[in-house]
Image (cartoon, rainbow, N blue to C red; front, side, top):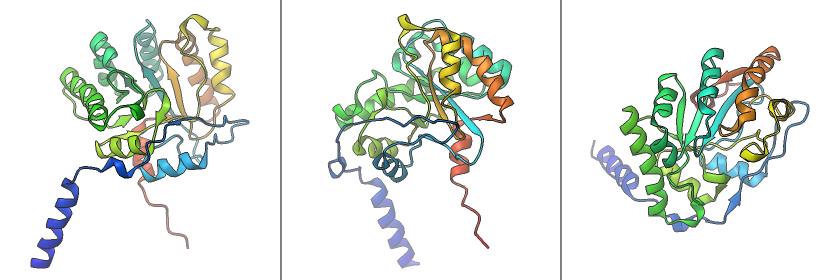
Length: 264
């Protein structure tokens, strides 16, 4: 009994010790991926894969299953998130919305609607800074302010996903945010959709998504895009016709933690 108590004491002490982020590289990395062709999985640099594996992050799901994970970045509102939510509700599709402090303050009703309709609300930081360029304390505060405001608006304490602003990260930011309880979520499908004065029409959005789709896609879309809002219903319908299913990030994480079957 004494030996067990000593081990428990040591374990508790280790958990209480703050992460020494000086032990981790803060070399700035810009997320990128090699786009899918012919529904083959998207890829990225091996060093990125190794870092995400080490710190339990994601950019893609199981490429052996035709599941898709729809995510939106919501830095500010441009009048289209309500339409996006309408489509998702009609089609019964779950999504994740990564929000900033500005969006939480400015669009509290939309955030509440996201939660009430079964979507995930993730953390996109309060001010949208380069997280590699801020101190540990500032990084924690950026995330805490979003979580606190989310809890104030919704009464929920389930914010666990983080999308680093602009896809900028380092080993340090991955390690520190993981210790803060977050799962970093990048993406394996995206296109230039966030420039609001250069929208090219719903057909362009449709083609941009459909030509990149692959099993396990984590889609990054921006809800400021008129094109996305107008194309979304058609995208969902046609991908379902191809045998794809839309799942939540919770499904992705839960199934990733299930051990692989033991081979005979």
